[in-house]
Every structure is written in C-alpha cells, then in structure tokens.
Image (cartoon, rainbow, N blue to C red; front, side, top):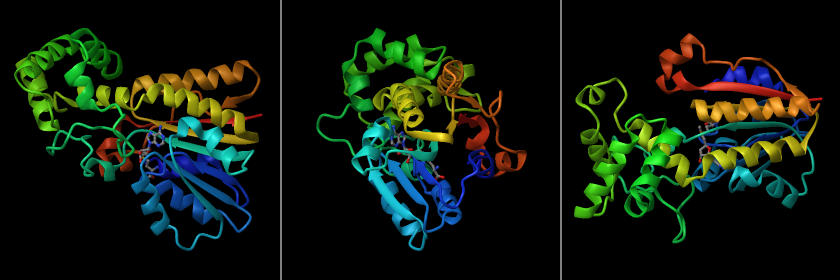
Length: 290
Ligand SMILES: C[S@@+](CC[C@H](N)C(=O)[O-])C[C@H]1O[C@@H](n2cnc3c(N)ncnc32)[C@H](O)[C@@H]1O
C-alpha cells in the first residue's frame, strides 16, 4: 500500500537503520531490504508471529542485518533497547490488519464464519477478545465502543440487539455477529455499498487491540529513538487514527523537534485504487526530525 509514496517519503539510504513496525505481508520490508547494504540494519516488528515467519522466507538474501521482533509496536523502545539499538533513522507504521490475517481464522472478516477473536497476535487465556466484549460488557459500554471507534450512527441500536441476542445464546462467530448487526439497522442502511457490520467490526478490533493507545505509545517511542534527520511514516485507514498522527506530529513541531513533511496526508494514486479497493481510505503522513 502506498509503496512508492512511502519510499519517497522515507528516503532510506543504504546504511540506514530502518524499523518496519508492522511487517504484515512484508511488502514494504522487502523494498527496504533491497535498498540497504551490508552496513544497513533492518528491524521488523509484528504482533503476529506468522507475519515474521513469512518475512523470513521473503528475505533470504538481504545484504543488511535483519532483526525480526515479535511483539507490540507500542513497546518499540523496549524492543530496540533489548537488542542494543539506541538510535534508528526510519520508522514505518502501516496500521491495521494484513490480507493474510483476513483468512487466518482470527475473526477479522464477516465474509467467512470464524471465532470472534480479532487479536493480531495469537490470543492467550487472559487476552481480551471480541467475543468477550459482545458477551460480557453492558449495553452502554458496547454502544460507546461502537460509536467511538466505529463512528457508527446506529451504535445504540446495534448494542441493544447484541445484548438481546446474547440472552438467548452466547455470540460466538463473525457471521452470527454480522447477522445481528444487519438486522439491527434500518433496511436502507443494509443495502449500502459497505456491509452494515463494517464499522462495528472496526470498532471491536480497535477495542480488542487497544489500537489508539498503542498508536500513541508507538509514535512517542519512535520519536524518542529517532536520530536527527530521521523520518517516521504512518499509513492510517480511518479518520480517528489519522487525527492522532496529525496531532502528534503537530505537537512535535510545536516542541521544535521536527516537522511534518506535508501539510495534507498523501492518498493512494488512481492506479492503486483500481488495483486495491482497500487503499480507498489509506492516508500517509511523514515526519522529519530536526
Ligand atoms: C497493514 S499490515 C502491514 C502490511 C505491510 N506493510 C506490507 O507491506 O505487507 C499491518 C500489520 O501490523 C500488525 N500490527 C497491527 N497493530 C500492531 C501493533 N500494535 N503492534 C505490532 N504489530 C501490529 C498486524 O499484525 C499486521 O500484520
């Protein structure tokens, strides 16, 4: 996604120390690997261990030193310090889920029937899942999540339908939830282009992974380890995330730490939109440290 735009914005050099904080399908990582020489260091982070396994297979011949770190990018500083990396020159955050995760049985898609997990990493016994949220939180809390993180106008109706339905039977799968949502919203809303459960699923995923705070923590950590002249690029997929990035870069500018590279976010080209409809909502912002 926004591959050339990221490469232009980051301007990686052959001896750079690059962190790809969201390895995913390793698309960006592969490009960084090609740009780096033996003097370069390439660090890949992902909460999903499967993404790192794929990256290892995708990069058997990179000249740069490669470090793959399983974990949350919100702890980027600890991850780097733990590997004795004290300064980096480039960081990329390409937020959200990767195409691989849509078919990984984690419950990100309502198009296939999967358990309602929505975690990026493999969930442990203590991990909060979307199933926990819809089956245990009270109606107001569910409505607040769907409204705040999904900007869903029918959040209250959907929350009411979820609570009504779970009294009959625990909600266990994506299709069960998608059907509940579909029947909770007005008929005209069911027949729009986007599936009526799109915003509800986005909201639950954000809540399960504490995505907004993870983004804030990740950005702060990245800004701290960034070398002078270093750059951070962030690709977001909805306005809530984009606002966080915009405000964070503005706050760094106010503090004299650096400046955003462009005032407005960069959008995908028309060609990319034809090839990849998901790119529709993607926005790229780049920050340069002084
Ligand atoms: C959109 S994909 C990245 C795609 C990648 N840039 C590519 O070119 O293939 C996002 C990835 O970020 C990971 N991710 C999302 N939030 C994360 C977090 N807080 N910490 C670590 N990884 C995260 C997901 O597991 C997913 O693999």
